[in-house]
Structure formats: structure tokens, C-alpha cells
Image (cartoon, rainbow, N blue to C red; front, side, top):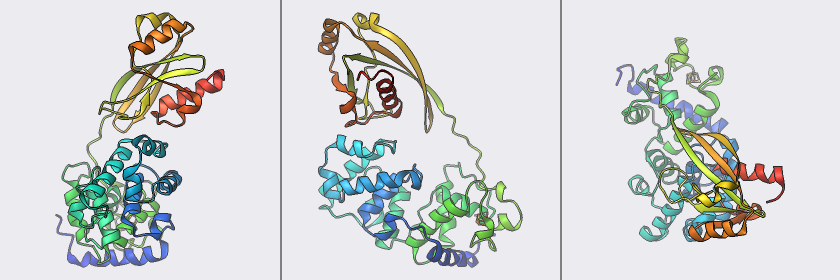
Length: 347
Ligand code: SF4
């Protein structure tokens, strides 16, 4: 830790709280201390911008207003209500965690940081956020906002891509932590996304501009320091859109790799169906650490016998355009179904 950081910096947390008192964003989950709602909100907004995820958050919590309702829901319905948010493993995890709360905690949301951390899919950031906002816990919810704000305020060149960054910035945050850690965590979230933005931070409006070493020394863009870039890995996939008379074949993914539990088209076909391939389209799609290249073959089966044989040999389900809305597909396949429907109006 740099010796520029001294207990004097405690006043920074206080300044942030005063600023938050006047500038907190008026968001629906700010009106509650219900740990269930705060937990869902933290998971929903982990990889989704607030403006994009707000409607989904509201729909999800209206349909599943408490732990019990979520725990008792069918997994496919939970996935359906997660539609549009992506990263579906988060939906599977919140469903499992709700069941965990019913089974291990008699349906009462645990209040201790260590217990919250035991819930499926909950990491240190989410556990700290829920425990501080709802149970007066004293742990900073350190995320990318903390890294950016703290490294600029202290002009600290600790590498945020290092595996030790989380512990390092947690220690740094403790030095400025006020008593009200729940509000402090939310203030850092707002400051990081509204003021101390990665590009063009609004330093003139920032409550910390008289303390921020990077600003005072005109070195804002030197921080945060990030040396490692995660290189996206290329991945090729192949699907067959096997259809006949407005119906097409699907299955639910079982493997843990990507898109677990979502629906997909058959990844292979029998030799008997090869003559029915009409065209192929290549779709490119980015996931966090993967660049996907997906070939989708349009297999228009005009033989009832071949269609029946293929269904009999495999375990595929039959869907149509309307019923596909009741299931969650990976975005590229959902788009394919939509485009096909628009182009041909036969599904
Ligand atoms: S003064 Fe600028 S760089 Fe420093 S914390 Fe505020 S917004 Fe960020």
C-alpha cells in the first residue's frame, strides 16, 4: 500500500455521503431494504446498464415478488422472465439460491455476509452490497467503479487486472469508509457510473475533486492502470433449422459450456435430411470472452417420411413461431427465427 494513503482520507467517505444525499438516483430498488429485491437487483445489473435492465427487473420482481415464489417456480419460466438480460446462468443461479434459502434458512434471507456468500451465484461484491444495504454490514462492495474512483483519487497505479486487485482496493476502500456503508456503496456506484466515468469524467461536478490526486495533477487518464487484456477466444458452432409446414425442431441445451438450459436447433442431422438443405447463413455473435461464428443451415423438409424418421431417431421437440416465445433461445437463434418468420411468413 502506498504511504500517500493515511487515515486523513476518512473525510472522503463523508463527502461522498453528503453528495449522495443530494444526488442519489431515484431508482425503484432504492425505495426498499428488502434483501430479496436488493439481491435480484444486484444480479440483474451486474452486466446490464440500469436503463436497459430496469424494465426486466420490474417484470421479474412483479412475477416473483419473494424468495418463496421464485423457489417454487418452474425453471423454464424463470429463464423466460430473464429473457433480454442475457447471461442466463445468472437466472439459473438465482432460482437455485432461492431454493437454498427455503431449504437451509427456513425461507428467511440470511443477514450475515458469510452466509449470503454461500448462496449459489453470489460473489463477494453482491454479498457486500446486500449485507451493507439491508443489514448494516460494514464491507465495501468493491467493483470496477471502486477500482476506477480509488485509483484516480489516490493516483494509485496498482494494476486493476491483477488477481490481487480486489483485496488491494478493498483495503484502500476501508481507509475512507464512513459508518453508513450501505449508502457509501451505493454512492460509489452512482459516482462511478454518472460522474467518474471511464471516458470524459465530469470532474468539475465531482464532490472529490479537491482530494483527487489524478485530477489535481492533470493525470486522470493515467488511471486506472490495466495491463492484462483478456483475449476473446474464437468458437465455431453449427445448427440446423429443420422445419416443415411452419413447425421446427428444438432441444434444450444440457452442457455446462455456454447457454445452459436455453433452447437450440439440432446441432446435426441425419444423411436422409441432407438433400433438404436450402441455404446456410453465418452469424457472428460476441459473448464476454468468446467470439462465436455460427453456421445455421436452413433445412426445409418436404418429405413427411424423412421428417417423421428424424423425429423418431432423436429426442427433439416440435415448436412453431408462436410457441417459441414461451421459451428462451440464445439471441442469435431467436433472431434467426424472427427473421425467417418475417421473410417467409410461413412459420
Ligand atoms: S475528480 Fe474526476 S477523476 Fe477524480 S474522482 Fe472525481 S470524477 Fe473521478
